[in-house]
Length: 152
Length: 313
Image 1: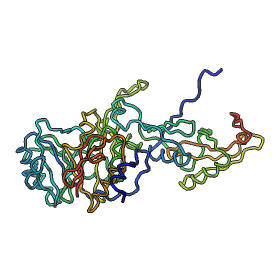
Image 2: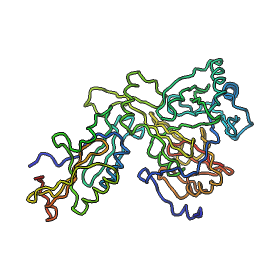
Image 3: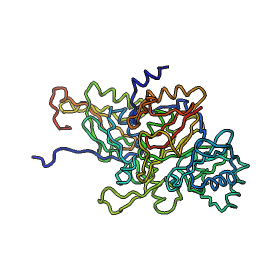
Image 4: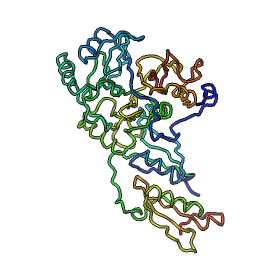
């Protein structure tokens, strides 16, 4: 029995809040639910400067760093040691994600095809405008219904 | 054009999620006047006429007025306790011709008025960095360029509502922002170390919300946005760093006030927009059906933060 209920959220740093909001809204259809520290009440309370971005059932707190943040090299599309957030989409929606990335001029790696015996179909790998590594995949096991929490 | 009655009956509500405008709607052509509160009319008149060189030009409803530029005015409203916030981002920026500015600076020096050289964040203002205060503490930016009101900066308790108001309702575009970008926060660290002489209202010390980290206060940029209505016509909005007493929601006219000149022939369109495009934070006036009053041919209204505005042709 797990001692936690679920993952609450991921906090990721970005360079520009507006740019990041637009990116997640456009590429993933994310909902911008809350912006913090653009009113006097939040400022007086010293709250962090961030926006809550809901990508389906996932909460990204996109946060401005306190100072200049080092960025990965432009050509690097996969995180160090594979570090990333992975989202799955339906097989039908998968090409649309690639189209929107292409339209925005966002380079991506893939689609990489996974072994047929495994749970994943294809994946692409890219970065958000803040240099955060993202994977988007479609799952073979989602077609049969129950999704196993297994990345192969 | 939608009739005013139909517009009032089928309003469209907008907020910060409403898609942004890519270009100004062309409703506002410039500034017409500012109404400032002062304690001593004679002292203020001496300053604006004698030192800044504005030309006495009769009386307006709120008090004596002085002309600057071709057809703009500063109106002085006498108040025993003027609403003046010298430590905030609020200021009026006046342009002086390149010939005139040195003479104004000489007269300020002769009058013993200190001229400050603060640094601003808005890219277009980095080189215009002369400021002084009038005898009541109204902050003035002295700019070299076309004579007249260059811009006005107001204060708000909520930048998002202000953005919605000045863009969706008055048809401005957001020309620049401060506080949404990593570089803004990095720049504030230099100010925290005493290495950057920033204008009042552009930086602040935030007490930390969490006690996890050792520093109890951090230097931060104070949020600002600049709405552009037409080429060269920009209005600044700075986040208030203190809670202020605002006028009652239903009060739509008062001082201090900023007068915006509506583009020729656009006043009916502005009125129609005020009736149709609504913000939930604004109250409607029962007589007009929208968040404004009429005075003569002008429309009087307040922004979401309680700043009074006058729109006229």
